[in-house]
Picture (cartoon, one colour):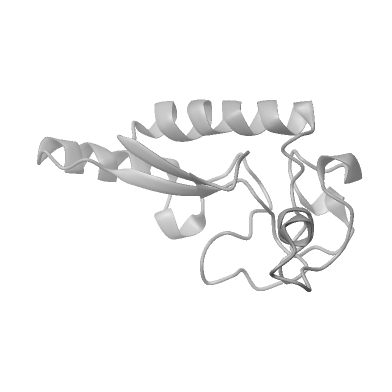
Length: 128
């Protein structure tokens, strides 16, 4: 499957987007920016994953059907429930009210994004 041009089609939360290079490349970039007094911000998506249908085994580690909202498509942009709980372009919608999912995503953002790479700021999309 082709990856989305935007980089939000997550399949493995434990690996960085290959467009950033290796983990060391990303650390070097942030360090080089800091050496020049430049702050670095990163954008992460915790709302959905790659469009994998119902084969959740393709996602790591959130690979259980219970990690996601029921399968429905957004069809009415004026219906807040439909917008918040259904899929955009068939991308499984993470259920942040599920305790495991919410805890994992928070830990992932802190441990694997902020602390590991030493980002100065983060924009987290769509977490209640």
